[in-house]
Image (cartoon, rainbow, N blue to C red):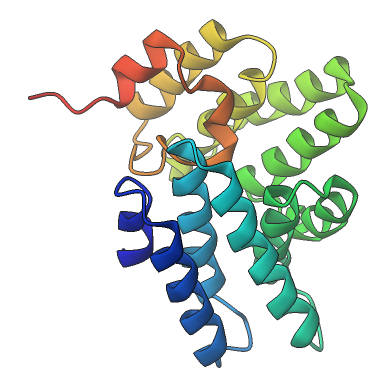
Length: 201
């Protein structure tokens, strides 16, 4: 929470110092704390500071290089893949996100498809994955599949993506990550999306 708070307060130096402390003291072999660190990077990018977001990602990747795991499971792969993506290294991001997507979690599948689209520009392939996610009707998802679908559609049609996102919210998807998640980054600045995520007073 402290790391995320540094983003709107424009405190990159304090954020990077905190990241260094977290990484230096992390003992969890699954590196679950990386989720919070990378969320901090996403917050900085959402607040217009892509340089600090990239710097945080580079620190995560340096930690990863110094602490190679014995095995790379989907959760770990999702975190490291996200760091590669934030650092702009899409080949490596795709390699790790492909491992993360093996557990078929909607968001992992969507992140992988988004990275592949960024590398290839293959609109048809992107929309096939988006349609597949949109067709999912598992009752326990609470709108997650539509949320992931919206993140992909946003790359080609922001109006349609916002409509899908509203349906995700109606189905129970929480909006707590909407303003900073990389999956919805193409929607930032789009008035209907901003209206959706702006708190009502």
